[in-house]
Amino acid sequence: MDTQPAVAYADDLVVGHRYQLDSYTLDEAELVEFARQWDPQGFHIDAAVADAGAYGGLIASGIHTIAIYQRLSVTGVFDHWSVIAGRTLNDVRFLRPVRPGDTLTGTVLIDAIEFDDRGRALVTTSAEIVNQDGSAVLTLVVDAYVRARPAAAGS
Amino acid sequence: MDTQPAVAYADDLVVGHRYQLDSYTLDEAELVEFARQWDPQGFHIDAAVADAGAYGGLIASGIHTIAIYQRLSVTGVFDHWSVIAGRTLNDVRFLRPVRPGDTLTGTVLIDAIEFDDRGRALVTTSAEIVNQDGSAVLTLVVDAYVRARPAAAGS
Image (cartoon, rainbow over all chains, first blue to last red; front, side, top):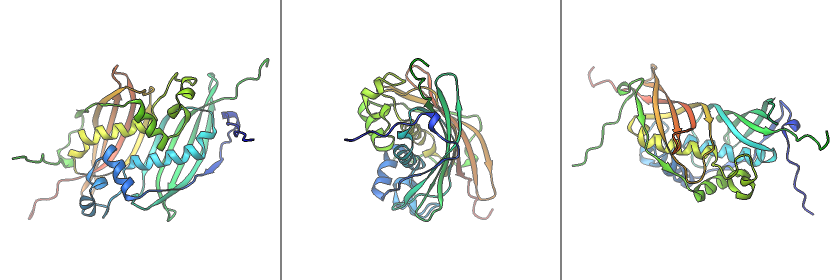
């Protein structure tokens, strides 16, 4: 029989725990398609403009890089927690260009867990996304609300 | 004859200037499709889970809301500037749920322009994205590098 893994409440999380993320490779077609829809600046969508630009070739939209971070962190971390919703992102730093063919991976670290009186905790995580050379391309800090473990019946 | 509008250099920008953005309506199919690809949490992709959840229905991924901000700000503001690249996002706040059928618009305000000695300026903007009721759903602060006007030949 299949059994669903237990979903973690904020009480189950540990400050200082670091999660290793899966990896994601983006190709030029995906890079350009994402940018045409969401970030149609020349250096993201037009190879001629990009070749003449500051980076000598197409670079991914920073929003695309954030989306890849989100996919990796949801499937690797947040989908196993009882998340209510994200609240804030801070210090979102685009450290190096992401180019067609790059393979991204990274880590998510639990920085802090602050319970409130509404049956939840604000959980602060910091993430680092690196490319195939191990060089950081994106770092960010995320605050999200996670449910506290419900009180047992009768307690 | 068509003439391309002149692209603004950092020298042409004015601290305190506020730009009104165009609007964007997202429907449920787009909301779910974006989240399936980039943020596959139940409250973004599964109506039954979402109906039972904290928000009483599907809500858009915060990354989707950021992508809509980026599309509106690129077409309305940044594509008219000589942008090199974004550097950081700060204080990205998800203030209210974004739901299927919502129409988003907003403003971008120039907060600061700091020239460096590399022919460019770091331009800080703050954006507010509101829904059709005028309620803020997202605010954020963006730092991006914009080219300074090249020195005239012989000067």
